[in-house]
Length: 195
Image 1 (tube, one colour):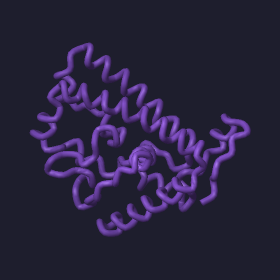
Image 2 (cartoon, helix red, strand yellow):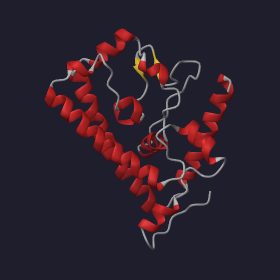
Image 3 (cartoon, helix red, strand yellow):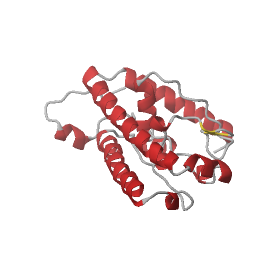
Image 4 (cartoon, rainbow, N blue to C red):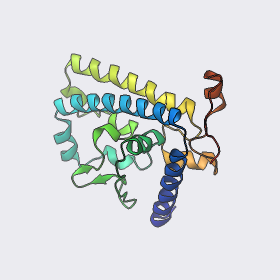
């Protein structure tokens, strides 16, 4: 897909998801807000450990080698986290190795970064962590993965591999359509699933 086509497709997806989110009932929005807040807390905790290991300096020195592989990591959960707090999604530049990467680093605050980005420590960073920090990092990562998994189980468009890939799988169906299994898990729950 060409850069401009990817940029246009991305904007269409964001517009679609914003529209779907606006149409959700308050109970569903409350579920999203609560879980996105928890994700943010855990992601900031991972970032603190990363910073303690001098991760920011190490990443700056390698010029974001890992970020060069992050082209499609922004997920439904990440976009919803931004929507919950009315935070503007930064302009993505699909001509870059990662559309969120700038010369100053990631455009997103740690609480809103994609799971694959916030939970990854490379071979340069991991040796900088002491055993306690390493245990804290991986325990927090496990808890965070479980939260992302709740989104996967709840919404048709949730994916650990990002919105662009999820959109191809959905083939036009709504991102925030509840999965059949999630409706069974909450008998009697009513949710807006047609957009």
